Image 1 (tube, rainbow, N blue to C red):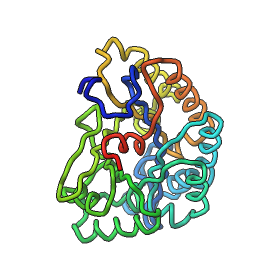
Image 2 (image 1 turned 90 degrees about the horizontal axis):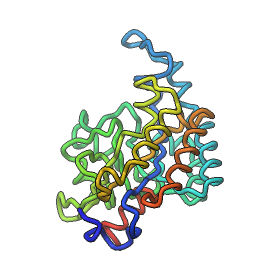
Image 3 (image 1 turned 30 degrees about the horizontal axis):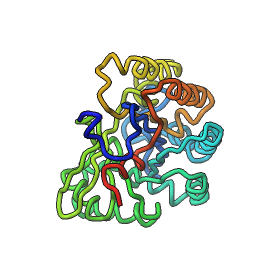
Image 4 (image 1 turned 90 degrees about the vertical axis):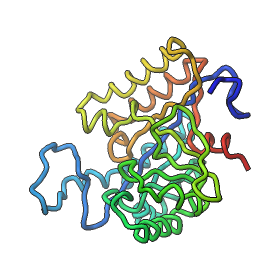
Length: 273
């Protein structure tokens, strides 16, 4: 898509949209994250209480630290929240909304992957996410892995965007049934989970990679595109991550061709009204 064909509302001469995301994840009582800071997994069938405790930092502490950073930087984000976190921490959801951020859905529990579910199971989990999170408008599946039914279910349930999308630099409209929905690209280059947890990079790699991409954007043809800044509340909600998040926001503001936004505002450009 050329700059001339961008939807009305995209800032003129700012070809790179930088969207800020927070993953606020939770696990049901019988589950734990499959990856954590210890590195060596436990034997199959053993509940990893260390990983559970590590993940609980997100809603208990990290989310509040992130709210402080966003308030200081005057940045708005989309928070992709596990339904089970909304059920356990309603006061936190209230604080996120009161601060002007958007709450989107991130499945019920992070070990429940839509691609593994029956249509009935997936519909039931979607329904309880909607009820607990207050009719969210956006969705990102656990592991970013939907089923063949997910997009249509979301559109039929009134969602405006679906972020399990990796085949485009810009949002686009899909119409799986009667209602349209925005396919929102979710980029992984600047994401604390793969960079810090999975690949073991130092925290500063987060801001360094972002800086390289943004600084070189005009050399890449300056075509319009989206780039995500994504942090998990239990990973970069900690002090080492907050430093890099604040630096990344500052880098985005140094370049005239970039503008800070979020998935909610991008969806409004493609699906207004």
